[in-house]
Length: 112
Image (cartoon, rainbow, N blue to C red; front, side):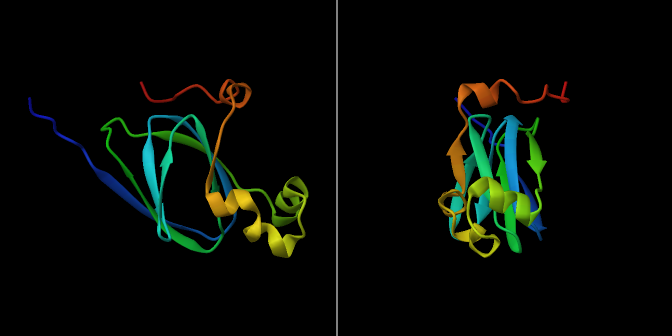
């Protein structure tokens, strides 16, 4: 049996903090010294001012909703001062399990 793995890489840079909600497919987000799996079961937390690259093994790709809240909104949601958002445990872990209620609110796929 022969398996061919399709590998595509996207390089990027986010100047802002972001929260990402993958909703179709899967990928690996390579940031700093971590490789974080992104799939519809996860929510990803992105630091501002950080380079990254994304690889994915599926030729169909993946889809995600990216939210870029202002620092003050993110600070309020995380219940930490604006200067301490980057030290919040979610940004340290980089990802968190998305519970079923959140997963059911994800958008429909646009890839046919």
